[in-house]
Structure formats: C-alpha cells, structure tokens
Length: 556
Image (tube, rainbow, N blue to C red; front, side):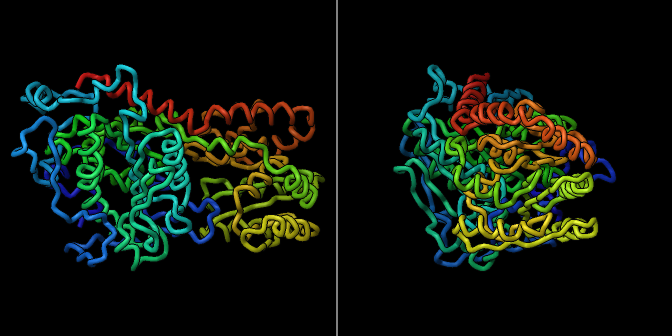
C-alpha cells in the first residue's frame, strides 16, 4: 500500500507542490513521521518506532469495551431549519472536495455554489462577527495525537502546546474539546475547568495493546483517528453547537490529523453543517510534509503555522500559511524560587554555568554546545555544562564527543519529585565534573530555577519552528542563547543572545563577551521578562480570535 495518507484514488493523481524545494538533496530528512519522540524531559514518554508499521489492508475488529465514544452508534445529525423528515442524515464521509477552504469561493469547481450557499447559510459563521467571537458564540475543537496524559501522551512540544492552549481557552470561558490519543487506563471522556474543557482519549482500544506511548502503533492509531473522529466531531460537537447558534473552530495539529481534517470538512458539507465551522490545520514542524496532500488540505482548511520562519519554509510548497505563535502560561512569568535558584548556582559553581535541555537531536546543536564548553575550558574558564537530554541515540554520540575532547562527564540521579534532593545531587557531582548529565525527571519548578541560576541557557537550535524553550527561559528571567530560525521574539543582546551559525567559536565568543560585561545582565534579564509577557497564551488566544474573525468575514 502506498504510504500517502490519502486513500482516495481520485486524489492520488492530483499534482502536488514540489517538496524537494524545502528538503534539498543531502539535507536531513525531516519528513519521516516515525521520528524518535520529542521528549521534553518527561521521563518515560512514548517514542515512535524506528520502522514504519504498514497500515493493515483489512479493518480492525474493535473490542466491545471501546473508548471511541460510541463512534459506531447510529446518529441523527440535525440540519438547521430543515423539516423533521429531513433531519435524519447519513454519516457517510461525502464525495470529498465539494467545499472550498473557509472563506474561499471557487465557482469553477462549484457551478451551483451560489444556490448552495444561500440555501444552507442559515446562521452562518459570517453572522457571528458583528461583535467578534466570544465564549457565547464560539466553541473550539483541538485535534492532536499528543495530549496532556503523562507519560503516555505528553511526548514532546506538541503535547505541551495543545494542553496549555486547551486549558487557556477553557479558563477564558470557551467550551473546548481536546481529542487526542490518550492513556488507555484513564477515562475515555473527562471534564475539567468547570465543564469548559472536555478531554476525549481516542483509540484506547488500540493503545491497550500498544502501551509504550502515543507513537507505539502509530499507523494503526492514525487510521482509527481518521475513520472515527470526523463523525464524532460532526455529530457530537458541531451539530449541537450549530443548533444553539454557535460556531465551531476546529484546530488540527500536525500530519497525523491532515486526513481527519478533510474528512471532517467532507462530512460537515454532506450534512449541511460546513458553514457552521471554521477549519484550521497547523504545522508545528516539517515532519512528514512529503506525505501530506497539500492540494486537498489547503482546499478545505486554512493552513497555519507557528512562526515566520515556518511560513517561509512553506512558501516553496505553494502555501502561504497564517502565523499564530506558540505561548507560555501566565505562571511561567513568575520569578522562580530564589532559594532554589541560589542553591543551584552555588552548588554548580561554574564560571560560566551553562544549562541545556532538549531532545538529543542534531538539529538542537548539542555538538556545538559541547565544543563551546571545550573552548571555554581551554581558555581558562571553570565551565560547568549541565544537560538534560532525551532517550534518543544521538545522546551517546554527544557524551562520547565530550569525553574524547577531554571533558569530565558525570551522570546525576535524584528521586523523582524531590527537587531539593536534586539540588544536593548537583552540588556533590559538580565538584569534579565539567559536564553534568541529569538522569532524572525535572519538575517545572526545578527547571525554571535552573533557567534563572545559569549564566546562559543554550537553546541554540539550527532548526527551531518556534523556540518555546527560549521563551520559557526568558519568562523565568534567564539569559537564553537561541538560534536564528523560528525565534521571532529574539533580539540579540537586548533580550537574549542569538547564534547564527553552527560554529562553536561563535557560541563560546558570545558567552565570553557577555561575561566581560556583567552590567548587561540585568537589562537583558529584565527585557527578557517583558518580551515573554507578550507571548502568554491569553495574548495568543486574542491573536487566534482575530484570525478567526478575518476568516469568517471573507466572502463565502
């Protein structure tokens, strides 16, 4: 079977934009969906399999105790202003592609579109925007593979993004639905934030036999997601919302949800509800771009991404996505515990004290960080490099390189949940080590204390779609050293340090220059906090609502 996500024979011949313009020969292939999981320091998070699992040719029999929320139950989906005899409709997925992207009009593809729109636009999206979208007239659906369940679903930055966005929307009063591949041992449906946030743990019947995280059995879960989520969204979310005069914004994340997005659009169109939903599909990274049917996806949804850097990467594909950035919670603007910060700084004792956290991935430029530490040590500095990586194989290469270059590497362990035990372990290990490799779970409090204690936090990625770690560092008042890709917020030597090459001497030189001017540290830390305050989730939601108003106001 072909590996493309589209199974529609009429669409497999559709001409696709040239993705080779984004991934030239010899570059690292970021399209492989079975990449090792983005483990943002959440111990035990599931990892993606090395080998691709073929999608089975035959349907999978579902056990009786399914957690798919009655997806196989016959449903009745109301069509607004229709007679009772017309309200019982089929939940078939439609003929695919008979509806344009939100706000777009394509008369050549739809010769009867004028009649169609006038007959189905009963309380359309465009009628909602006289005073803008608000919790009284808008519901939000988030479609994502990753989600809030630790460690099963919280495999990386995507899980953090959808979890925090969903919570922020719910706290703002919006009825929010997060559909994700959840822990099979937790309830299939859970309500939080006084009923504003609904968590739907999908594919639990598959996850029971694939217990090693969200990406274990990845392709089986993708098929189940595609087959069942669109009908659930249409019948259980969009139809009731439309009956109450509310619009539904569906925000889908990453390649796993691309087919579910266009199937949802097809189904809503077939039952007369498409005009009551705004569909957006978001690219957080370039993973699996070669598998996505961009022609179909961009026809039925609005493409978005998280930074201008990602927007420019997508231009060669013939796409011009809207930019809606990531954010951080308001609580990440609070200063870290000063007692813990002081204890970590005193215990590590480096001059400079460098901290780096992230997946062990070549894109994160771990080798540059290690080589910069080597050069700082050889120039007479008592450098301490504290690192927390993931479970990826590149970690072995990084630590071996540090050892070969003459750095003393020591593993640091501590009991989970005891931050002060971790502080004591750091103190003891730092006495005779240059590189301290943290081998324990880092709580948010401990991590943010490290951000504040370090002379520089190395988020020096060579490919960073947004750079959420750098923003978290700035929120804690730390000195972030970021790359020069998706970090739209970065102004070097104003609110952070920005490194533009993979040359270790550039990184080492920037750190030496900063240490030679201690009077700059206070202003940089202060400006960093001000910048981070511009990227809280509440501000991101305001941006999102503005984009939704724009899309709803376009001619339909």
